[in-house]
Image 1: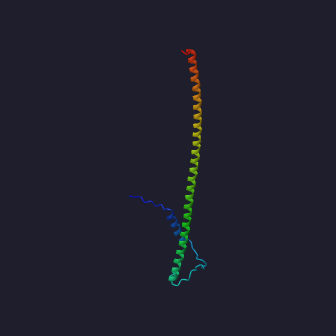
Image 2: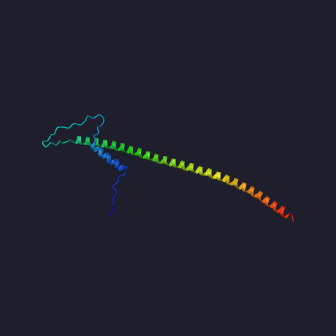
Image 3: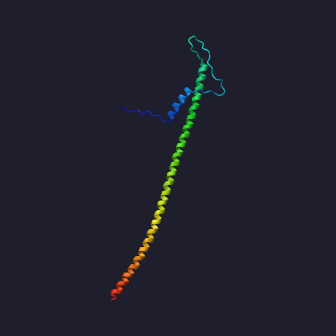
Length: 145
């Protein structure tokens, strides 16, 4: 039996929020007078709405929902852009840190190389003088024969 994941992605969450908001909040169109309840015309207490009133209500709800969806989409786009900028900034910081570490290792390697060359020259000079001293001592002891 397959398990189905019920996690919504960001778009699904935003859409769900917008739908819930459209049911819970009242949106007024530009400069319209607030709607007042008309007296009931039937004896059962229910009011019959005209087709024009229903169409107007549907248009108002559609407009409000579209505005809310556009606003939510804009907020989601802003959040995505900020997240991308944060990831890019983190990558740049890490690259700068790695570059600083690489230059430190490079300078340490150059210093070690210079010290190694200096030590090799010193060892060569010491070996040359030691060889000359040993050779001179051997010649002095055994003579030139």
